[in-house]
Image 1: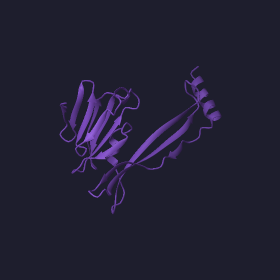
Image 2: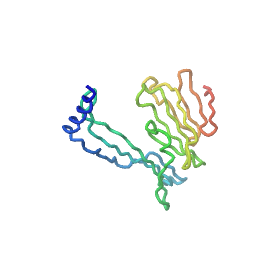
Image 3: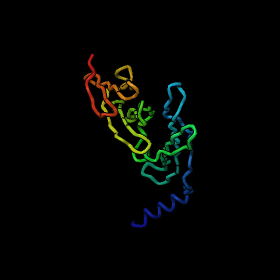
Image 4: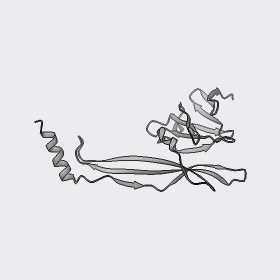
Amino acid sequence: MKYLFPLLALVATTLGGCKPPVVHHDPPETVGERTNQLGVVTQRIVRERSYTSEDVPLTPEGPRKRVKYTDRYFMEESGKPRREFSVMQSVDLTNYGKYWPVEKTSSWVGLGIDPVGNGDALYFVLFDESRIIRTRIFSVVPKWRLGKDAYELQEGNRTLILRKVDGAEKYDVLADTTAKVEK
C-alpha cells in the first residue's frame, strides 16, 4: 500500500507526458499615465503579464491545467531608460486595474474592485517609484446595486469619494484621513 501513490504518480507522469511549463506573454498594457499642462504624456506605467501553464495529470479531480500569472510593471518616461517598478512585486496587485498620478507629487494611486466578491470591496494602494506608501481595503456599495461607480477620484486624484451604505465619505489619499461628505 505504501508504494501505491509513488507508483500512480510514476504512471501518471509517464502517460501524461510530464512536459515543462509553457510561458505565454500578453501584450504590454498601459495602466496609468501622467500628463503635463499641455496634455502630453510625461510618464507611463506599463504592465507586462505572462503566465505559465502546465498539465497536472494527477489531481483528486482528474487531470488539470495549472496556470500561474506573473505581472511586471515598468515606468516609461521620454528621454529616460525604461525602469522596472521592483517595489510593485512587494504587494499583490492583481486586484488593481488602473493607476492615476497624484497631482503635484511623484505618487500614484491604484484602485480596483474585488473581482471575486460581490463588488463591495475597493482595493487602494498609494505608491511612488521607491516604495509602497500604504494599502487599504474600503467597504463600498457595489456598482450593480447603486447604478453608478462605487468610487470617484477628485481634486487631482488627492481625494477619493467612497459611496457607502450610510452615505458618501471623502478620503484624503495623502493624509490618510476620512470625513463624511455633506449633502
